[in-house]
Figure 1 (cartoon, rainbow, N blue to C red):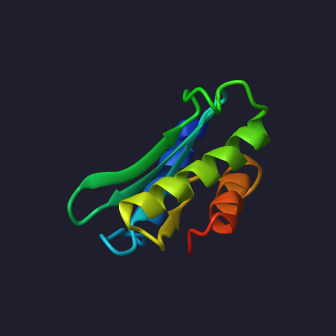
Figure 2: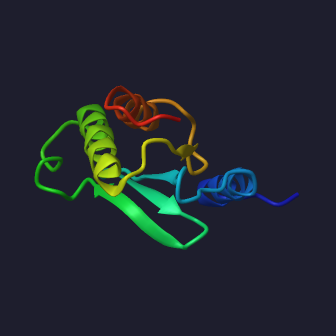
Figure 3: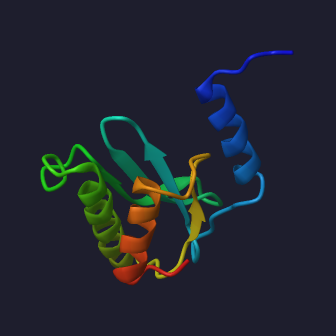
Length: 117
């Protein structure tokens, strides 16, 4: 029996989800990355292979916030940038993380700001 690290288990979950979830120009993939320090999200067009909009915890308006507030504000910012890029809907890629806590806060804030998924 092999013992896998936490990162290896998340990587396997991420690959399993990515096999089923694909973004396009009209419905890009909302990819989430969560670390101990912050949260990062991107809207990705997998057909063309480029990012339409992105938000990272290192931006000045997100920098000093508490983790859940930071995730919520990041979701709002991403939804606004998605509208500017012309994307109204998306498919959600939780990146192997549980849909709970900061990942859930980002998703709900993006939905409330008008991003459909």
